[in-house]
Image 1: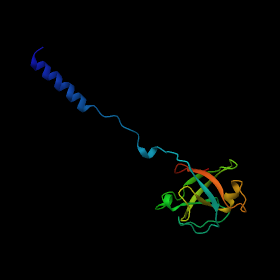
Image 2: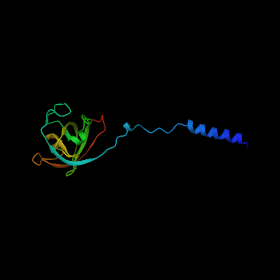
Image 3: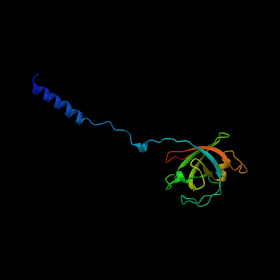
Image 4: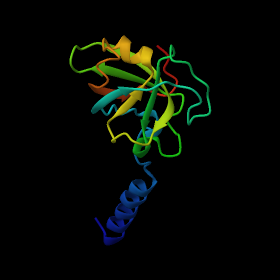
Length: 138
């Protein structure tokens, strides 16, 4: 082969490599990563929450720590909560902020606290929880 042929072949290989489309990764927004948090679960009497909604004690409502609440991006998002002591699980809607809670701690409506098999006299239970995907409804 002549040197000219080598140059033409090299240019053809380079141009095909440049023109080949790169593989496309799926959008990150479609990926839900479940992070399980652990902490103390307490209860409070609900009312007007930080998400701007009025609630009653019979609603399954949860307040999350200020560290996670931020600017309210989890408002109206469901959580799955487990009482680590008895294994009971319930779903609740984020509608409030808990300034006194640690990062993994949550404050729950009385009915939610009881749905997890805890007595209001108990006051504090150990819980684990995670957010459900946006749009989830139990």
